[in-house]
Length: 62
Image (tube, rainbow, N blue to C red; front, side, top):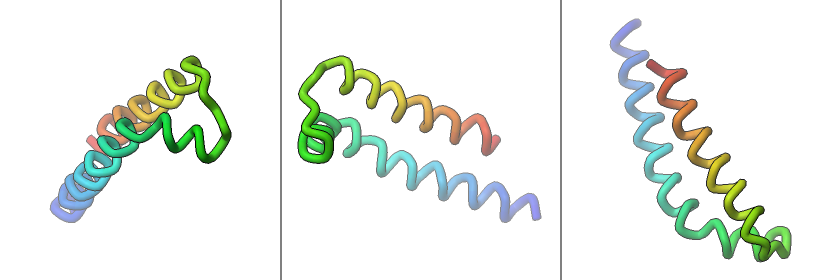
């Protein structure tokens, strides 16, 4: 059971890492297309939310 849990945590960490980098790079165009948002404050908030969810994943799964 412990082995399965560790393997699933590693897999989720890998998937989260693979999603985080493109989302951080393309956050401005995504918000511009989706919400027609060009404000820098909204982009900063989106980056903070992405990073906080990424950190939460690793602290929750350990």
